[in-house]
Length: 324
Ligand SMILES: Nc1nc2c(c(=O)[nH]1)N[C@H]1C(S)=C(S)[C@@H](COP(=O)(O)O)O[C@H]1N2
Ligand SMILES: [Mo]
Image (cartoon, rainbow, N blue to C red):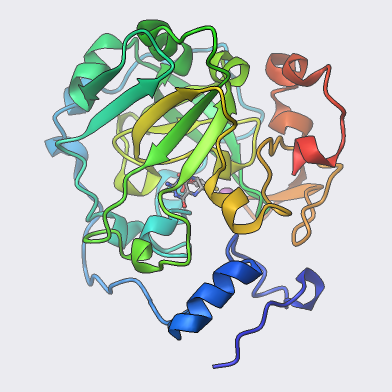
């Protein structure tokens, strides 16, 4: 098999639709050495219906009250569209992972909170839900692939969890980690990806009121494909900053090396704040395709959330590094 690492401008429009359309050279060499690159496809799971979340032990908690402080300038995306067009590389590097994701065992599920904190803990998801004030927020979500959705997330502000565990003054960053288990996550057999999925925020970003831990979608427990039972939503940054199915939250003084930085740091930086003025090498960021409509609309700086977050960055150079 010929393995080529094409330049962005050499990729036909039809192929330039995935965040993984090109792996960096090191990843390619690893795969090539073993002769297996691009061989694995997800398992074909015929006829698996969408998970019935009625059986979820947290089902009785939803729907929760909507917080009207966070408003939308567009319609909500129909759930059928949002729940069948997803990025979740643990289950395959394409958009149709929703069937494969039904294999994710969402109970028992524990989250480890550790590192530079007073109160390290390992807490079951249902105990955590009982401690946190749940609310619903309507947020925009903007993928760096230039599509967007609007979604009713349920969950809690990350700042509440942070106050519960009391970080030390030395903590500067928070790192989020997704599970690793290739027995059900077929994408994790694609060993050239740097599993686990890791993301990170500065403490100030993590404490910002917009930063939301998602445990529910559309008035019920979150579906596996959206990152059940707990994921993050950081709506002023490109979607890849919002890690799914989180098993650990670590407070640290070192900037986390994220999954996408590890793979291709020229394309996916740590900051990744939405800004239409800086194009990604493969996608213009000026406009976005709104899922569920046939419209492209102009993209807004900080995805429209500048009033909440622009201050976080006011003393930093407003250059490409802050936005890609
Ligand atoms: N663990 C994990 N989290 C992830 C991803 C992933 O592949 N694995 N993809 C990210 C990307 S690129 C996007 S755009 C969003 C997609 O969220 P959605 O499928 O709920 O719309 O999840 C993000 N979180
Ligand atoms: Mo994305």
